[in-house]
Length: 496
Ligand SMILES: Nc1ncnc2c1ncn2[C@@H]1O[C@H](COP(=O)(O)OP(=O)(O)O)[C@@H](O)[C@H]1O
Ligand SMILES: O=P(O)(O)O[C@H]1O[C@H](CO)[C@@H](O[C@H]2O[C@H](CO)[C@@H](O)[C@H](O)[C@H]2O)[C@H](O)[C@H]1O
Image (tube, rainbow, N blue to C red; front, side, top):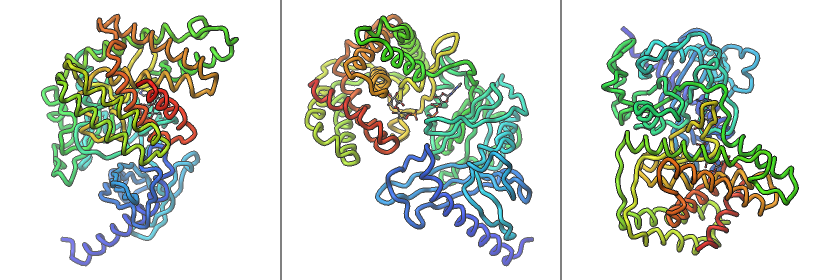
């Protein structure tokens, strides 16, 4: 039996380790691309380690730990992050960039603490657990029925503009490790599973996921033993119940796909390389035919979402509530980005028009953060990715039903971004965006039977809401890009 003295020693060693990690995280987190609390200071004691789960290598080298840390930035709501951290006596070559710093373990030995997703040995450990559908303490690895994981695949962390961190295994699987710890149904997983069940071909096929029992909500930490199949069975595909936190999603990797942003960018560059008299449709790298196919693929996914998941209708009074919520969002955004202030009255008026739509509007589950970086062109056609919604919104907002127009407006904004971010002639950029958005809508109409441009008031309302969101996003993440949404806001304000 463990004596009370031993207990006390263990507890104080734990508290010491938590304190060391919290100090390292306070310095490291704000430097990460996916950290969402940018712009607010983290004071002393601004990071608290809430949970630390040793997963592999206890007393050995390396050790893999899952940490749930709460960041309490000054003047902002706290945010929780989930981080796989590795501890090693010495960092192997190539892992230096992933280091957080040194810590001392319970025996007083110095260990290097680093982001474990960059360590092929530890990333491989996670994939092996998934291959077996295992349970490791409160962490549950779910492999979907019929899926098989090839073991020993080399892992590589994807670099790029991401809100999370993706690890590619061989050229077979991609695991997205969600950085924010949010209890409840993860919309990306929820919608991907529903679409896969509906036979949708326009998404990467889901392979499995990892979730964590949320201690606070009394989650099923004890759920089953090794290979607890009941949890993953088709009758209970039971993606994250309310008391679970989704830690990672795993899907098929599309090795030959290119994302829509890169393709669109190439087309804009091509246009600028030609004389001013050349129109976007006649330029060598015309994106129009691809935009048309993308519109058709989007309509198919919307159709499958509406078939697989509940749908609804927004009556005029509810549209008024939507307008009010967008106006509240606008006011909050103007506090964060004062450059929005001059446009607030005109934008309020434009959003107010939503309340005048006098017929019900159909609603359904939508993508929620639809842009060219969320679509990939494979040899077969377009696939849509990342159904998580806008990372800075609450889970409830991200899972809410909305008119499909919300996604159409997202893509309209993305064509605007692609056209303007290279800094060419604004009129030519506007022509490129209009030409491709027209093609996108024509493709959408060819499948759905309805041209999204007909719902012009709704489209403008959602485009304003998105551009305002983007202004906040850019101010926090890419201040040099802030002028793109601000210019759009000015244009949308004038269009009333
Ligand atoms: N199944 C996949 N196959 C190939 N590349 C992918 C796949 N899923 C995502 N990617 C790449 O990873 C990037 C980020 O994925 P995404 O799900 O949007 O992550 P985040 O939520 O962190 O932004 C995408 O823009 C795409 O380039
Ligand atoms: O892809 P994420 O889920 O991380 O979405 C966030 O980041 C996006 C940028 O990476 C951001 O999208 C904005 O920039 C895109 C170009 O980089 C542009 O195509 C989009 O239209 C524009 O909204 C997205 O808003 C944000 O939520």
